[in-house]
Image 1: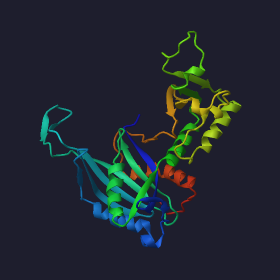
Image 2: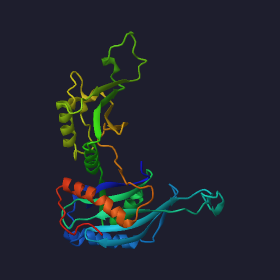
Image 3: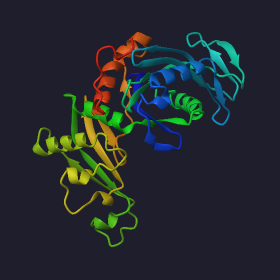
Image 4: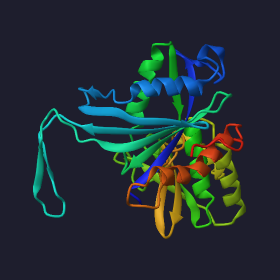
Length: 315
């Protein structure tokens, strides 16, 4: 698994406190261009770092630039609150003492794609290990937008659904079945003893034969769930399991296999978080990062009815 990757989320803009009152990106209340408005606000965030004393974290925007539909930012974040030391990993020798009110900052990238019209944009956050700086970036931006009675809302389920469907459709990935777990209705299962109160849960596995009609129907049903929001997948109905309903189960999982490795997707409450891996163990240069994300961003935009024309992606 690569140490580097990225996450894609959709975003919309609304009146603060009224998430359903969404603004199209060319609305006159936004000056006719959300891209220009966001560029101005993010410019003012550069080198205006903020410490979160409750979480003992520090975040700052280092640089930003605008190109085509894109705002490309370099951001940094780190933790503070306890004394530490820096060492040379090759020699093991200490190079610096780090005080409790100092933070060691790691760079990351946030890229916003803001179409000139419509009400959906895309925000891409670089992931290192399993962490990104998306949350402090959006929090700081929303503080500034709030002064104008605006708020940015993230929608991750559609983008995650698109990503998982792309993954599941790869020729080297197979869906082997579904796993259903019940912790509340174990009384519907027969046991060889009278008192089943000691049973904490029942796990049921329904295997799918590769290439079968049921497997194809199941894949089509999964595709229809993209964009449905955070809701149960109803796997019981998808696999045609009689005498049970989805309410009988507390957990619903899709079992996949790739290169002999089993991967479990927990879909009880919608698509799980997806991190696109980058094929590198060294942080990519900005141009390489932009090149790697472009195709995936296009696919997500297409899912919400946007087909970018030539000259939309930042260079």
